[in-house]
Length: 208
Image (cartoon, rainbow, N blue to C red; front, side, top):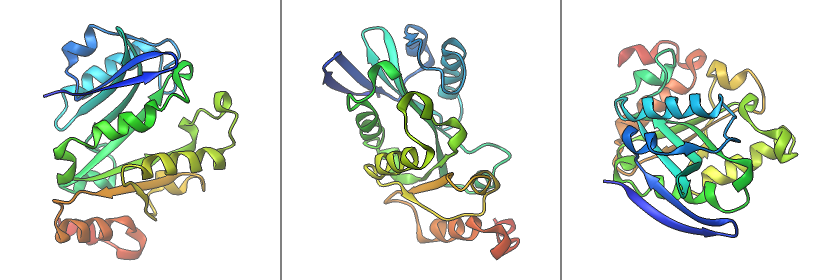
């Protein structure tokens, strides 16, 4: 069942909705400035693929028939340590077109996403790497951008978590954030904690 919010902005009405099917996405176009990860049409194809992955979910911000923003959820990458945890879901990416920023879309697309009760069954993580950040268009340096992101994700309960994950420690601005759903067990949390530092906890993850 699709959850939908009507969000009025100075630039027009935006519908925030999801989780979307690939058929729904196929009917829409991508805003030409959604280029953070790949060209818009290729990114649309990637979004459609995610909808068909196990536990994959896409939420979009739509103006008429155009996607102006989106957020993705899916299982962690097969090469990631987090894939070994049975209750980790990754917020893979969030992007809002430069044409539609400062309209409250990012906050609301996260709000709608986390009203989905399924989120309470997972430890939702996001791995924020500074090489994906749009510092050029926003005119923010990486530290200011990091603060904006952590504040944004904090609105839905994601908090910074220390880790020695190689992708995170590759640059001091990179951050791991996590949100523990209310249905996640203490055992699941303990397993997650044991996975955060491989150097400290050795092969604890191999006990899974």
